[in-house]
Length: 144
Image (tube, rainbow, N blue to C red; front, side, top):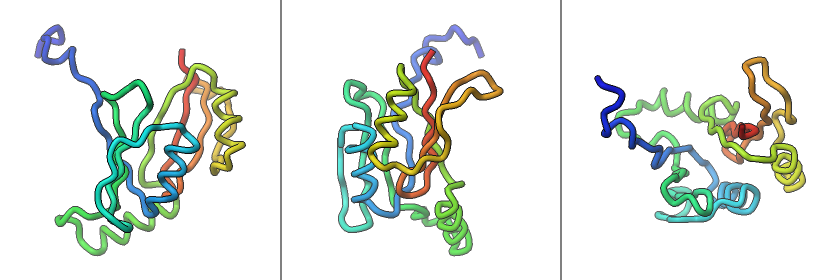
Protein backbone atom coordinates (compact mmCIF):
# COMPACT_ATOMS: atom_id res chain seq x y z
CA UNK A 1 0.00 0.00 0.00
CA UNK A 2 1.34 3.41 -0.91
CA UNK A 3 1.41 5.60 2.21
CA UNK A 4 1.12 8.69 0.03
CA UNK A 5 -2.32 7.57 -1.11
CA UNK A 6 -4.83 10.38 -0.38
CA UNK A 7 -7.29 7.86 1.11
CA UNK A 8 -4.80 7.08 3.87
CA UNK A 9 -3.69 10.62 4.67
CA UNK A 10 -7.16 11.98 5.38
CA UNK A 11 -8.10 9.51 8.14
CA UNK A 12 -9.13 11.04 11.45
CA UNK A 13 -10.51 9.65 14.67
CA UNK A 14 -14.23 10.39 14.52
CA UNK A 15 -15.76 8.45 17.42
CA UNK A 16 -14.47 6.18 20.12
CA UNK A 17 -16.52 4.35 22.72
CA UNK A 18 -16.14 4.07 26.49
CA UNK A 19 -18.45 2.15 28.81
CA UNK A 20 -20.40 3.85 31.58
CA UNK A 21 -22.46 2.38 34.39
CA UNK A 22 -23.97 5.62 35.69
CA UNK A 23 -25.02 8.13 33.02
CA UNK A 24 -25.48 11.05 35.43
CA UNK A 25 -22.06 10.55 37.04
CA UNK A 26 -20.50 10.25 33.59
CA UNK A 27 -22.19 13.46 32.46
CA UNK A 28 -20.90 15.26 35.55
CA UNK A 29 -17.35 14.04 34.89
CA UNK A 30 -17.12 14.66 31.13
CA UNK A 31 -19.20 17.85 31.02
CA UNK A 32 -18.59 19.50 34.38
CA UNK A 33 -15.04 18.36 35.19
CA UNK A 34 -13.40 17.90 31.77
CA UNK A 35 -15.48 20.63 30.13
CA UNK A 36 -16.64 18.56 27.16
CA UNK A 37 -19.83 19.50 25.39
CA UNK A 38 -22.78 17.12 25.21
CA UNK A 39 -23.59 16.36 21.58
CA UNK A 40 -26.23 13.65 21.91
CA UNK A 41 -28.00 11.88 24.75
CA UNK A 42 -30.05 8.95 23.51
CA UNK A 43 -32.01 6.41 25.54
CA UNK A 44 -33.26 6.48 29.10
CA UNK A 45 -32.29 5.31 32.57
CA UNK A 46 -29.04 3.34 32.61
CA UNK A 47 -29.51 2.52 28.91
CA UNK A 48 -28.17 5.81 27.56
CA UNK A 49 -25.66 6.52 24.82
CA UNK A 50 -24.12 9.92 25.54
CA UNK A 51 -21.89 11.56 22.93
CA UNK A 52 -19.42 14.11 24.29
CA UNK A 53 -16.45 15.91 22.87
CA UNK A 54 -14.13 18.85 23.25
CA UNK A 55 -15.65 22.20 22.29
CA UNK A 56 -14.31 23.42 18.98
CA UNK A 57 -13.53 19.88 17.82
CA UNK A 58 -16.81 18.60 16.38
CA UNK A 59 -14.97 16.01 14.31
CA UNK A 60 -13.87 14.07 17.45
CA UNK A 61 -16.39 12.45 19.80
CA UNK A 62 -16.53 9.97 22.65
CA UNK A 63 -19.66 7.87 22.96
CA UNK A 64 -20.34 6.77 26.53
CA UNK A 65 -22.32 3.56 26.27
CA UNK A 66 -23.81 0.91 28.53
CA UNK A 67 -21.25 -1.90 28.80
CA UNK A 68 -21.36 -5.39 27.30
CA UNK A 69 -24.55 -5.06 25.27
CA UNK A 70 -23.25 -6.78 22.14
CA UNK A 71 -25.52 -9.81 21.52
CA UNK A 72 -22.41 -11.90 20.74
CA UNK A 73 -21.09 -11.50 24.29
CA UNK A 74 -21.73 -14.42 26.63
CA UNK A 75 -22.87 -13.99 30.24
CA UNK A 76 -19.38 -15.00 31.43
CA UNK A 77 -17.81 -12.36 29.17
CA UNK A 78 -20.32 -9.76 30.35
CA UNK A 79 -19.48 -10.57 33.97
CA UNK A 80 -15.74 -10.29 33.18
CA UNK A 81 -16.25 -6.88 31.55
CA UNK A 82 -18.17 -5.58 34.56
CA UNK A 83 -15.47 -6.93 36.90
CA UNK A 84 -12.71 -5.31 34.82
CA UNK A 85 -14.60 -1.99 34.83
CA UNK A 86 -14.88 -2.18 38.63
CA UNK A 87 -11.08 -2.67 38.83
CA UNK A 88 -10.47 0.14 36.36
CA UNK A 89 -8.69 -2.12 33.89
CA UNK A 90 -11.19 -2.34 31.02
CA UNK A 91 -10.94 0.88 28.97
CA UNK A 92 -8.72 3.94 28.68
CA UNK A 93 -8.54 7.26 26.90
CA UNK A 94 -5.51 9.50 26.38
CA UNK A 95 -6.03 13.26 26.12
CA UNK A 96 -3.50 16.06 25.67
CA UNK A 97 -3.28 19.59 27.04
CA UNK A 98 -0.96 22.56 26.59
CA UNK A 99 -0.68 23.07 30.38
CA UNK A 100 -0.65 19.76 32.23
CA UNK A 101 -0.14 21.26 35.69
CA UNK A 102 -3.09 23.67 35.41
CA UNK A 103 -5.32 20.97 33.90
CA UNK A 104 -4.37 18.51 36.64
CA UNK A 105 -5.02 21.10 39.38
CA UNK A 106 -8.45 21.97 37.95
CA UNK A 107 -9.54 18.32 37.60
CA UNK A 108 -8.18 17.32 41.02
CA UNK A 109 -9.93 20.31 42.65
CA UNK A 110 -13.21 19.20 41.04
CA UNK A 111 -12.96 15.93 42.96
CA UNK A 112 -11.90 13.49 40.23
CA UNK A 113 -10.35 10.17 41.26
CA UNK A 114 -6.59 10.77 40.93
CA UNK A 115 -4.51 7.81 39.81
CA UNK A 116 -1.23 9.62 39.16
CA UNK A 117 -0.01 13.16 39.67
CA UNK A 118 1.89 14.82 36.80
CA UNK A 119 5.14 12.92 36.24
CA UNK A 120 7.85 12.34 33.66
CA UNK A 121 7.46 8.86 32.16
CA UNK A 122 10.43 6.70 31.13
CA UNK A 123 8.98 6.53 27.61
CA UNK A 124 9.46 10.24 27.05
CA UNK A 125 6.21 11.99 27.96
CA UNK A 126 4.93 13.88 30.98
CA UNK A 127 1.41 12.97 32.02
CA UNK A 128 -1.08 12.39 34.81
CA UNK A 129 -4.03 10.02 35.21
CA UNK A 130 -7.57 9.94 36.60
CA UNK A 131 -10.43 7.44 36.61
CA UNK A 132 -13.86 8.41 35.37
CA UNK A 133 -16.93 7.27 37.37
CA UNK A 134 -17.05 3.94 35.47
CA UNK A 135 -13.40 3.20 36.23
CA UNK A 136 -12.06 4.07 32.77
CA UNK A 137 -8.47 5.29 32.94
CA UNK A 138 -8.10 8.84 31.61
CA UNK A 139 -4.46 9.77 30.98
CA UNK A 140 -3.61 13.36 30.11
CA UNK A 141 -0.35 14.08 28.31
CA UNK A 142 1.55 17.35 28.19
CA UNK A 143 1.19 18.44 24.55
CA UNK A 144 4.51 18.95 22.82
